[in-house]
Image 1 (cartoon, rainbow, N blue to C red):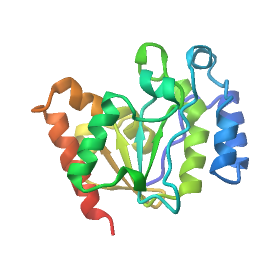
Image 2: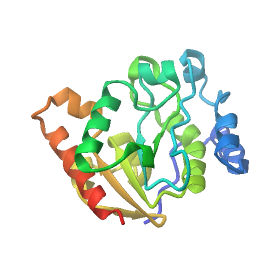
Image 3: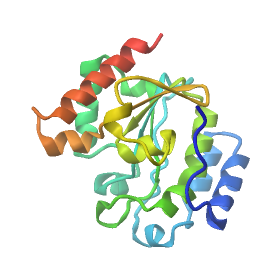
Amino acid sequence: MSRPRPPRFDAAAEEVARVAAAAPDWESLAAAARPCVACPELAATREHVVVGDIPVGGRPRLALVGEAPGAQEDATGRPFVGRSGALLDELLAEAGLDRAQAAVLNVVKCRPPGNRTPKAPEVARCSGWLRRQLALLDPPVVVALGLSSAKWFLGPRTVLGEVRGRPHDVEGRAVWATYHPSAAIRFGPNGAPRAGLLADLTAVAGSLT
């Protein structure tokens, strides 16, 4: 299954894609991404471009891909360090997965004002960074956390309830779409998103060799 072309692929998105594709390694890519101003509204209100975390050495066993940074992530420059990150760490441990062996990324690298959902042009403009990250890191498995991430990998008409619970072959990688930890927080410890997220992470752990 091939991933569809991002929506509204404008000149700014083309420039990001060009710059990202030219980066020979992670350090070069991160250095190129940090001053990005492709999305003027996001650039004007962010504190940090949250490039992502990667394992200290070697290929990641999997990549965890969320939507966009929140307040804590924007303040620290690191992904999934707020409440959602704490729950994600807890559920990863319960599932038998080690975050230290994963790449932790987002579809959009800057915090949208008020933690709103990223707009389609913002997703398109940021796509070059994520595409190059995946090419450089080459994770065999991707966990798409939340609907925005699931749509990035599986297409704009994706319905999370219809695609979660099983892997999807996307450009040679197994992509699992599941709930975002923020949904698990919103619905509480006994809610369906938390149980579903844990079940999916456990299935991912069982699929890894």
